Length: 72
Image 1 (cartoon, one colour):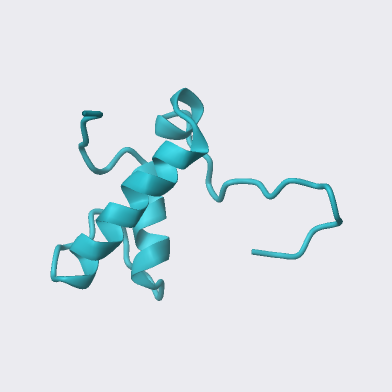
Image 2 (spheres, one colour):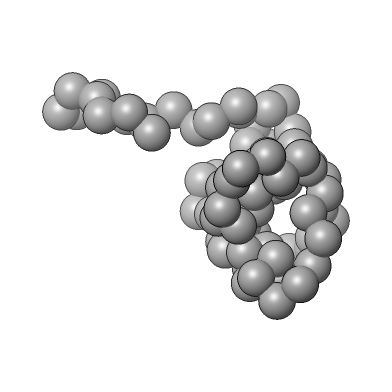
C-alpha cells in the first residue's frame, strides 16, 4: 500500500464487484482473517500465490469470491 494524504481513504486492492461491493469492510476483513489461519496451517490457495504472504493471498481470495462462507 502506498501512503496517502491525511484524510484520504485507502482503496481496496483489486476491488471486485463481488463481496466487497455487497458487504462492509469489517466483514471482508473478518473473512480474510479466518482464511489467513487456514492458509498458515496448510490450506491450498485458491488464487495465484505469486510472491505474496498469506495475509495478501487471503484478501485476494476474499475479494475474488474464491472462498465460500456463511454469516451465522
